[in-house]
Picture 1 (spheres, rainbow, N blue to C red):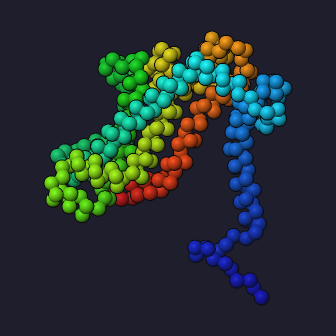
Picture 2 (spheres, one colour; picture 1 turned 90 degrees about the horizontal axis):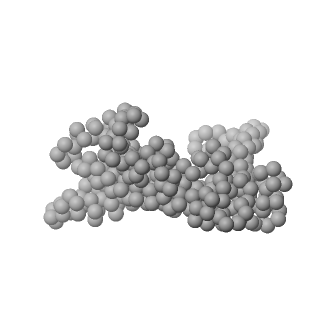
Picture 3 (cartoon, rainbow, N blue to C red; picture 1 turned 45 degrees about the horizontal axis):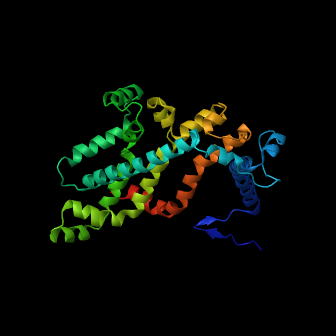
Length: 299
């Protein structure tokens, strides 16, 4: 007797061989991603002797956990200063970007507002055309922002894509609620602050994560506009000492004791640059489907 074929969502269920091949393929992909990350964590936590004996890469530390690499980079030198700079750029930049993006998105969602269509067209055009490196540098220079942290914060404080997503979400808000507030005498600002934002926490959280990750990971603008090493963000320090392989000394870290191997220090810097985003992401993940997809489909 021929076995009845099982359908899932109208599609035939894959056979056993196909499922095994898919499992092996997905396992291999996960291993390619996870194994290097485990090696980075293990190397940063391994003892100096074990790192030297392993040739610079430890997959699983066998002699306990050693935090000397973290103590060295967080002892008040270059890495500590860069961490504080990155925290300032990310927090202030994200706050400014959210304020500008949400207010602009709200204004563009009000179809009867003055200059709505020309401003929306300008935002859409900015998605297609990039001003270029030299004009951007000349603008920063003209405003006197060279060698200032504002040169890293302000140029990327408004993303046209994020504005469109926020605007689409605002357009999809219940019109009856806004009309009731308008009848009760609420101004546009009150409707935005007391109705628009509370009903749009999902998209604001997701857009805020986009901005935060962008500011935290940015290094190109800092490399162009910042000449003072004390103003370098963490990602530029990461690029200098990890990607380019420049050796970091005790005078750079402000350490008074012997340093661990360079590989341990590099892996510790890499972990310090990754951990903050890993800690924030789980709290925002549940808003992704509701925030981005709804904002992209509506409007």
